[in-house]
Length: 282
Image (cartoon, rainbow, N blue to C red; front, side):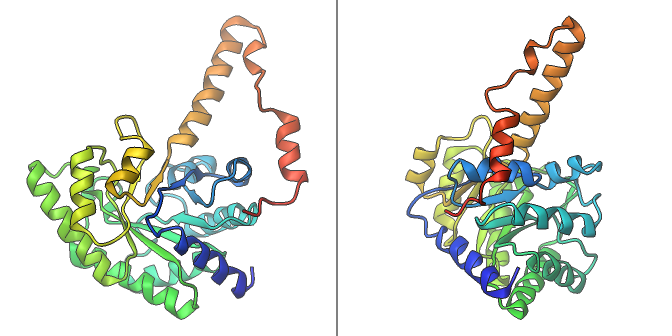
């Protein structure tokens, strides 16, 4: 992808974060899912690190080699003309300099944004200084590339149990988010948070777009817009729904010997149509 196109997609993605309405991002895991979601008229897409990893035979949590992540993301980006934000986990590097090199590689495939998380394999939280340095390195990489990607700083305070009280968790999350914004992040993603009052308090505390993850118990999009949430992403949910549906159909086939469960309202001709037609151009 040429640089002008990369810049245009990043600028288009950035404009979608004006908070006048909630940006709803379905997370794709391959070119097929990207085409399906693009065909539905979404304004932008994201990737899911878990879905991408599973589709390529690895567990989530930076188990998939960077080269495979880059190749898979390239195929997703090439499947659509929509802006695509990459779930880039912890940045694929042991040092900020290594993170910068990895971020430059993912920018070069044409992504319009990235997520960077401050958790380590969903087990522990990085120090604030380390996480902020990684974000600063990512921003430097974007500036050097000349592409204004959106950097979404994932705050894993509600994903990882540190034994902190609810008040301590909130205070730490706000402090982390402010450091990340100062380091060059554009938005904040408190993954795992569903409580409406806490989300509203975060929106008030942070002068930046807030991303929440879609899951059971989350307020609906109208209510989230009312309290000022900027974007909602589906994370691994759509990928697990797809795998669950395939698993259920296979179980039914094996249990009954009947093929009824293999009939779907969206099938082979529909997928063929998506790949025969020009890419979506919203």
